[in-house]
Length: 464
Image 1 (cartoon, rainbow, N blue to C red):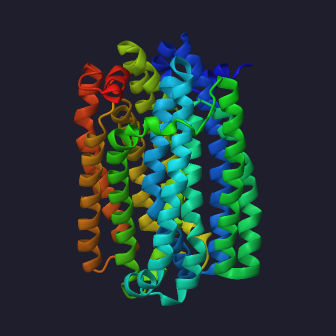
Image 2: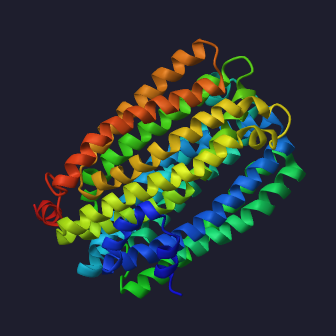
């Protein structure tokens, strides 16, 4: 039985009409292969990481687990925005040009990697120098200074792996991404457990650094093989010829993601500065792991959306674009809903599994789980915005969403709500984002290419 037939047999009844429309085409075959391998890798890697988080929380306790969460958030948030923007540049443009212009695709891959390394190195130095101030003045935890400096290596590694995954998605190398995810997921579980058992919080941080290092190595080897199979020569010699993409495409994504990342991190900083804040942060981190777990399948499907929409956009295939977008919006929302319901029902037992003190996290977990269907649909619509080159619109919508989250967090924490207040703020921001994206989604279904930045536009802009 083929991968495509397996997905057809597993497709829920309400989604069959959408599936049947794409199944008989090349698009359907690409969707089936990409979905199967992305889901396979995500299931394994996310499952392993979730299990590891439960055991790490039990070993560290609620307060120290909150410190672990704030360290990880701090050292990754500063590089996330660059990784997201460069990863999207690679995904969109490698998908567009790997067949039409392999030389340009090779330059874009090289430019993405070079920009990621340079930006990550600068940000690492900045974070290393500012850690004492952040730990003492912002996070009210000066004792975490040395450990946060060690963890700053995660900034560079997280940025590089994000860009590498974007490159592999642009090549539609989803099977390769699945294999890498399996290897990293299988490794992260014993490494984190052993590191935490032997070294406590410090061991957990070093375990993350080791895991990210292996992820970078496997991705690097995978990109070389994917580029060779596609006939794309990755070279740095002329890669700066594509530097205009960094400003015209990457800048608005970087600005939007950076604002989102920094402001979301600020919400955590507001929480830990309250009395008992690190305990509440530990609860929120545990509940948020389940949000990531619920979204792991929609995230894996979403990873397929951008390269395929970009490919359809390059062909100006109106009908295929609309079918593919509708199918993935319904699919992602349905999957997230199916996964969120059991988490809501089992929430008391889930939080109790983390150990003493985590039972107070039932309400935050329920709130976060209920928001995931909307988040998953929003992520698909965002890929449509990106595939059409509407990057400043993407930036504006992100800023409005994050502004709502920060305002709600500040207000709810002042009322005395801890982790539940932060979770409620995320629900409010997500609801606003859904409302804003809903109108755009309807308009896109009517005319997906109105106002889009086409491949011809980019070529003319580069020539000018």
